[in-house]
Length: 83
Image (cartoon, rainbow, N blue to C red; front, side, top):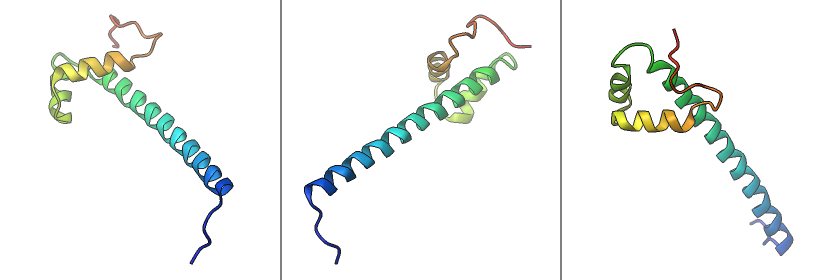
């Protein structure tokens, strides 16, 4: 059986868990951003692509619109269409 921890060990463990959790949240946000920015590019491929993406993701078309607007690059012009 492992020994019971003291207060210092518990505090250190909590700090390490908090750091690991913060790294996880940062990575999750980075991945979400990359995903929705890619979806934003893909929805401009042809007329009706946004609905096809929504169907593929099993979400409403409006959710695709909201998420792509939320994660759109600040330097990306919202009215611009890629060729």
